[in-house]
Length: 116
Length: 116
Image (cartoon, rainbow over all chains, first blue to last red; front, side, top):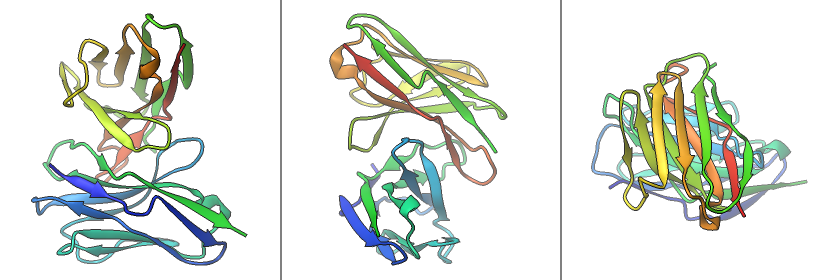
């Protein structure tokens, strides 16, 4: 079974600074997707960034970028120029590419605080 | 973009009664719906997967008779918590895969269930 591990229960960053959230996963599959989701206090799940395992290039979305190390099974999220609105729970997630709908397996989450 | 409408947002019910939670895909057809449960300050745990026109698939440890899932049409999936007890109090979230282009997931806004 696939597992996703987030070893940082909480992180704090000052506004305008950069922070990196860690995620490791375990799978025997070679074709899969990795995600970072943000869950603010409203608890609505918001997709931050997505990475296809077959792509070597790291995904980027504005201030958000990932460091995808397939051999190490590592998928960290870097948030640059942190803003107060970035404060939330961040979940790393994995889904297998089966060609049909595949469930998401979530990590335990990292709570990010953004301070002035 | 793709939207999954989840209702109710919150519900309080008496112990022993049943509660139905609905998830509707508003602008796309959801042949599959994932149902997650999230306890306070914890991650999302998959409860079951519903598929239009077939029986739901439940994760290990989830009581099928307590959590009834029906995927009545390509736009509606429901979760009924039967004979609810205080330990069923949680946050329930539905998610439909594959909408919005690429390989993504659309989440409902969640239902906070409190059983008293």
